[in-house]
Image (cartoon, rainbow, N blue to C red; front, side, top):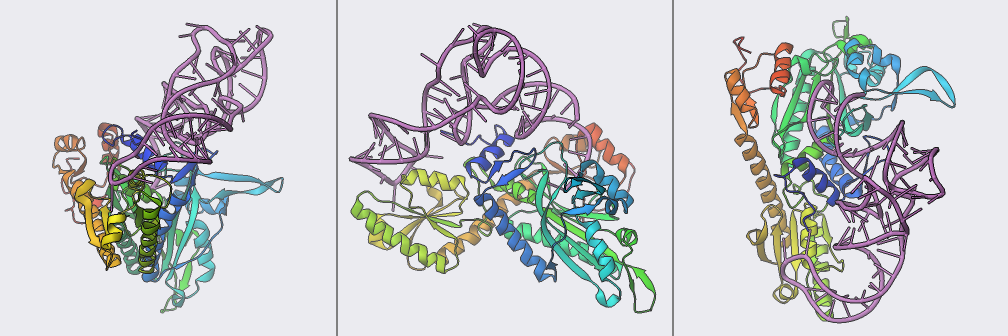
Length: 460
RNA sequence: CGGGGAAUGGCGCAGCCUGGUAGCGCGCAUGGUUUGGGACCAUGAGGUCCCGGGUUCAAAUCCCGGUUCCCCGACCA
């Protein structure tokens, strides 16, 4: 009867099974592209909305830019086009005729948005510009994986322009903090903030920061990147402003992004052998009510109480669902656990008689997670549980991450450590070191954590 | 893009080697009995066997080409 492969047996298969059983997606007829079904999209929307609020809180506004970008735009920034050209989808025909200039489907929007910035910005009074885009982009990936690497993926990309490097750098670090906080407070996902090696920098950036999260198979997942573009794009697109001192200067720009990959990572971090375990603040359904009855008479009474409870919880702002399907309670318990609903509310004849309910926490399996409680004050009780479940998921993820990070000070220690999980090591920021890591150990330098002392020797 | 595996009803699979009426479990529909941890009985519906070509009296099965998925590598958010 097991529909989900145990994580320990085959983590990749487990991930596929969970997404399928939770009814999150469907395959599309085009390679590397997926259909996201309502349960999956609602989860994405919830994560998006919370992140969007954080963008608004830090002064950003949303806007929309074209899907199609003139090929020549990509070419203006040399390393940018070099980095992206292998994965571009190019439109060569339109209206039945070959285009004079091919259009690329955006792999990211730096070029087209900075083209506009050049026209909008004349004076230091026009700065800063703080814009975010929620859209999808296409990158011609050779090897795809559900949500973690799809050819078309949904994400947000922030693009800002500033008068000074101090300001733009402050933006870059601020947005990295936003990603980190979003992970911790909204998604119960801890991550390590740091700087990418020069080898791993975004094409065209002078510096790239990232937050890295550890998934259940101990692999790393980039949970947000923030790029300091310096004046590279400003020069390429001629974004100049007249400063207070009446001299013309190039802007300092930034970009930062987070894709639905993070949703896949969140699933891999929290899920267990029963299926999804969703943090309450992002769960499409936060609480599900399962009615329990035998006779029609019981059913009438139970359903009346269950619906009353549903309305109470809904009025309190809880995303609640009453499962009135004609299935056995046991079936429903397993079904909703598979789909990761944080709290289950059981209402049976005994509860009707006692004005009580039984609550079950998704993060604590079996009877240990059951709580018998009065119907009075239920909404507050459940909201309190949400906070506890969030904290518990975060604690578990933090403990897992901590338990799987080794420290290494020699190549031998590093070599042994990477077999176990992550390794904190004093690496030099040298492309030769990155290459050596890949060739000899088949690992990558995820980032240089901010709280790590810089490497001094040349042992690497 | 290189190497390996796979595609048969909504899901998971058998059948293919050795060509001959397309099967199983779950799910779905209807009726009945059930219901505090994945219920049971009965009846029934549902399939271009991934697509296109070829061989053959006859192709899910053999041959050629293509598409998609999964795994391993190179690349990437």
